[in-house]
Length: 290
Image (cartoon, rainbow, N blue to C red; front, side):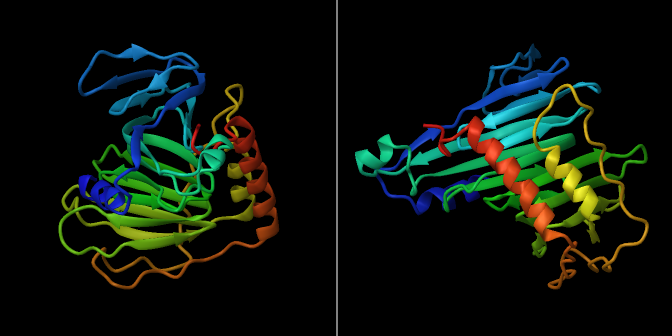
């Protein structure tokens, strides 16, 4: 991640201002807690609390939470999840005062780095600036999310020791880079597709990737669930279909990947997505948080 941050910052002018972004616990259900490496004491959280870098947020089996980032990103944390805020920095470039006063900072950027230890999160990315990065890590690899989209990512360890990660790309696209040494080829996952990554205990660095088609109704339901409602039940995780519509990639080192499969009714998906992003604009109208 340090190398990624160096590349991100190397393209910026010397006068750029690098600041820590702010992450607020905008909504919650149940007893939400946080702790960090530097301060292992578990502390309870309430609505309006601010998370710090290196904080790991935990939700109980009957709880959930909504995080709002000062760059406009929203993260909905499902029940029984652990999510660490590894890094959140914002870069403010010099710009005319009139544009800065009006909140228009087209050359600003930000970097969000999250680590999903277990459970499931839904991430809503607004149209961030071109220099912005949003990444989610699991032991199996890193997912770099496009700057405008809605994503649902989950990770779990089964009773048998198997690692199972799933990424649903509702809108937008993501680039998945498998973990481990070597020259594993990244895999692009387009909208309306599902990425399933499994690792056997005996070969933790080897993963099998399958692209599965999502039903249109499922996409519609999960897009609507991207608006946090603490009184409602959490959307259940998607169950992998028994037969994939595209064959799995032979190995993570293969240069070829499965062909994306696009579900029908794009108009429905786009309409619901617009509603989600409009709700996002109402809760945080300034993409940089001011």
